[in-house]
Image 1: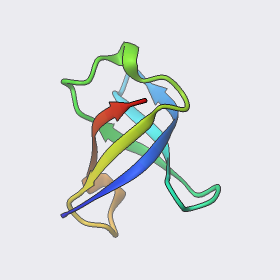
Image 2 (image 1 turned 180 degrees about the vertical axis):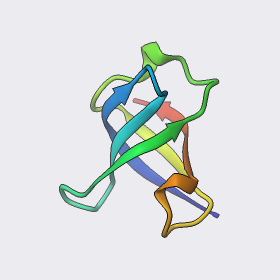
Image 3 (image 1 turned 60 degrees about the vertical axis):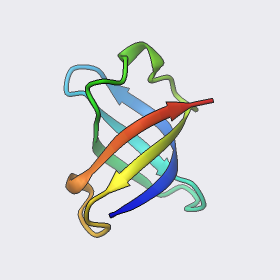
Image 4 (image 1 turned 180 degrees about the horizontal axis):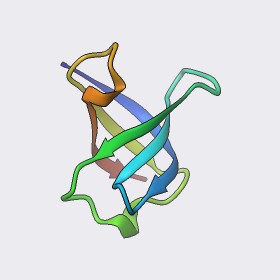
Length: 70
C-alpha cells in the first residue's frame, strides 16, 4: 500500500468518484477514483489537496481518496 498526495480536479457526487492529479505528475489525471463515503461531498471542491491510498499502484480501481485538506 502506498499513500500519495493529489489535487482534486473534478468530483462526481452521483458515483462518488473523482478525477485527480497526483502531486508531481504534471497534467496526468486519474479518472474515476473512489472517494471514501465518510468524506462530505461539500468538502470535495476543485483544487483541494487530497490523500490517496493505493492498494495497487498499477490499478487505479484499487485506490481510494481517504482525506481532503487545505
